[in-house]
Every structure is written in C-alpha cells, then in structure tokens.
Image (cartoon, rainbow, N blue to C red):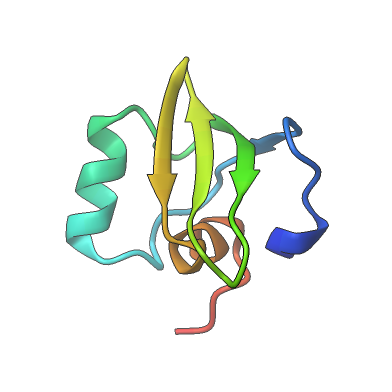
Length: 76
C-alpha cells in the first residue's frame, strides 16, 4: 500500500512492526499503536513531509518513512 494511494480517514490495520527500529517501535506502542491496532491517516503534508495519524482517539505526527514501514512499503 502506498502512502499516496491511501484515502484520508480510511481504517488501516497494522500487521507488522518488525521493520521499525526499537526506539520507534517503543514510542508507537506508548501511544497505543501496536500489531493488530487500526490507524487512520488524518493528514498528509506536502513535499514528502510527515503524516498525522489517529489511533484510539490520539493524533500522532510521524515521518512518512515510518508510515511506509508500517504499511509494508518501506525497503530496508
């Protein structure tokens, strides 16, 4: 799934966090984003900037690269 192809406010289940580094994985888990949770992309900023996502009522800004890894598009 590509970040550009995602419609805003579309539910996206998270299946795999293994491609993320340990620090990013820990921070996402602290705000309630873990394997099996559902996120919604609320806003995409231009020029490959960050994205705002929502999980369990919390809005979190993350790098586009991190979102691509969450969606399985990132090549590591």
